[in-house]
Length: 344
Image (cartoon, rainbow, N blue to C red):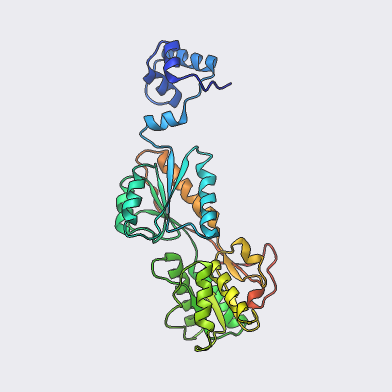
């Protein structure tokens, strides 16, 4: 049975060796004579000593903590990311520290300061500058989530271009819709930028002229309501379909459209991206693209923990996780079966 009250100093006294020798034996590092190793192991076994995790971390110059840098915490997307990150961090006995920059002017400085207090960091793409990311990578292992970092900094992201192109092509071909509008702001968001590119690509592939620019808006549900006001106020031609950059915006657009007495999908088709839990619960259920949000963060945590466990190691490479087109009634399709959808 483990004795949490027994300390490394007491084990050293009982075994008649130095504290450093006990640490070398318990961590399996350094050279120790067989006689000293035997005495230390006997004392450890007899008294049920278990090395303290925090003590080991401090001795190794570590903090026993990982950092997450977000632009903000509103909406289910960031909740899923946190849960995915913690699913790897907690079993490894690492606490998770979260920094919400809210895209402030001192975001770079805040992230660099956190880097001095944790063992590794995951940063949402577009949250801090490339220059700050490179400086951060000199301090701790860094992984960019939902975006790509500069240089050799590792990244984990979902596939965005092909999946949005598949969704857009479905609306243009299978539903014979025209005058599609993309709602979302590509500036500052690698994910939204790629989805806008996929939207335009589908038009070009079919020889159809896409809109010159998106309806730039934020990614929260309230932003979708405001976008609906702009698009459906009556002074502009009503679009045939709205392809939203994420589900939160699409749900706000749905509220705005239904509030104006429009029928979805009969009068207006609305689609999203993410497949948050609410997407399947609203009426009509939301056609969207499912991305593995939890796995994005879990994979980032695994990369960081792997580097932390090997001093001098740095996470590298770009990992792209697959997404899945989910067809529901907001585009006029019957709901996909639980295992259905189009892999992209």
